[in-house]
Length: 167
Image (cartoon, rainbow, N blue to C red):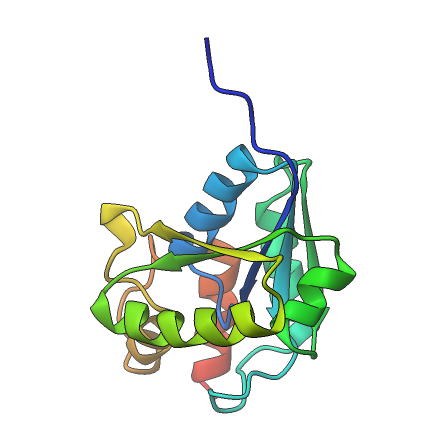
């Protein structure tokens, strides 16, 4: 007998600039565990430079890829992550981890989030092996130098990214 799905709502936050197949893997896996998933697209990330794509375009890319996941919605936010989670009734924040460097940053963020919102649990999913090397910044760098990004991002994203970096 399959296990009962966990109750509740999870937020999967990120800049998603651009969304990668690794991001979509984490979102899909989260949707199998939680009743509702809110993909939170950071309007203007603090720790990163200006985004290549607008928040609206990043949302549209993700929405196009999650149409078969009825329990997933995509929204932008420009508040503290825990505030966004509270506004959406989330009891968990789910993120993917690829390497030790991700862990160090996420550990620090988890401690700050836990202090502000102890009722919201942070859950980390290990990247699937085929995506363990994949990052938005790596994809952007590959695209800037004319590298092949097929199989790393959805095809619509690859097309738009090639248009943007070709400018």
